[in-house]
Structure formats: structure tokens, C-alpha cells
Length: 193
Image (tube, rainbow, N blue to C red; front, side, top):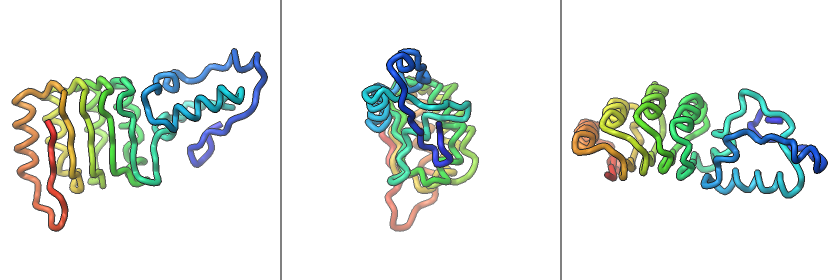
């Protein structure tokens, strides 16, 4: 059962129930996600445990978000646009909980999924690092991101390498970064192509 704090309560079951237990599909795709999610899954299998109740409200974002240091790292999980849409639905809650670093590299995210993620960004936030490396982002994604850079006043590092931005996307992001106001005593935005 998912508790109010977002943690998963585990209950013991016998061998027959374990064989019949159905873990949600997202937990099976987390093979390359952070160790925390994989460890919880392995512990559940080893101890013949399974989640008591999965609700529609349950989200893998809550399971992999590290609130103690403000990091959401689902890089390399190849979750595609599903991850972007899931994060977009929880974005305001993540910023309320202190999200500072968002690592979405290696997820095969396309322009469509990234547009949904950008559309969810409607108020200024404290994001410092954004890693979008090794996705399928094109010039359209660069335009969406350039339009939202003003809502990321604390952003210091943006990694968009190994995407399909092309020269057009590169120029769009560089010109948008150049129009950002100077920040006193803080590092300026570094974009990695």
C-alpha cells in the first residue's frame, strides 16, 4: 500500500501468491534506473514480499525521487515519452519538494513528450541542473526549452548532447541563454551540446 508519505508498504505472502503477484509494468522497466528502485524490487522478491495495494495515483516518480538532495534520476531507463508525461504530471509537486537536479538522459524521449514536460513548467522554479542527453530531441524541443528558460532562473547546467537538435536547435538555445539576465555571484548557464 502507498502511504501518505509516498512510501510503499510491503506485506508478506506465500509462494503461490508471489507467483501470481503482478508488479506494475513501470517497475520492470527500471533495470537501469537508480539503485533505490532496483533494491526495493529485489528485496521484495527475496523476502517473498509484494506491494499490498497499487492505486491509480501511485507514481514511479515518488519511488525514485531523492528528496534529501533534490535529485530525480531516471537516466538510461529508456522509458520514452511515458517518463516525460509522468514527470509532467508531478512537476509542481516535485518543485515544492525541492527538486534541483533532473536527469532524463538516455530515455528516448521525443519532441512530443518533451513538449508535454515543458508545458507543465508554468512558474519559476529552483532547478539547477537539467540533463536531457541521449534522447531523440529535435529543433522543436529546443524552441520549447528556449521559451521556458526564463522560468529556470537558477539553472546552471543544461546537457542536450547526443540529440537531433542540429545547428538550428543549437542557435535557438544559445540565443535564448544570451538573453537571460546576469546573475550576481552565481555561475552562468552552461549548455553542453
